[in-house]
Length: 78
Image 1: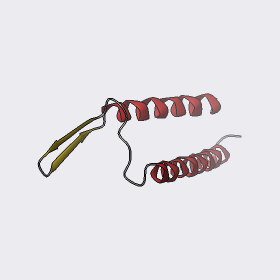
Image 2: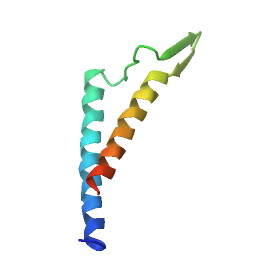
Image 3: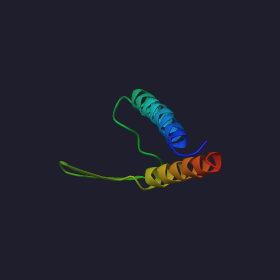
Image 4: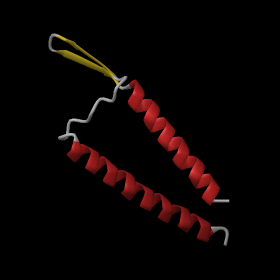
């Protein structure tokens, strides 16, 4: 199947992935009490009333996960 059929499959697959990712966000929020969590290696600076977060490790982890998901999508699409 090519053309409109493959576009439909892609849209369905993206919808399923969005449901899975959204569910993970909800579960993560419930596990951390809605405040998120700093991973070891993330930098948090408190200076008076100012708080600055540099979620370096979190960004690297998200990048690795998204890269793996996109690699899997390209493998499935072939």
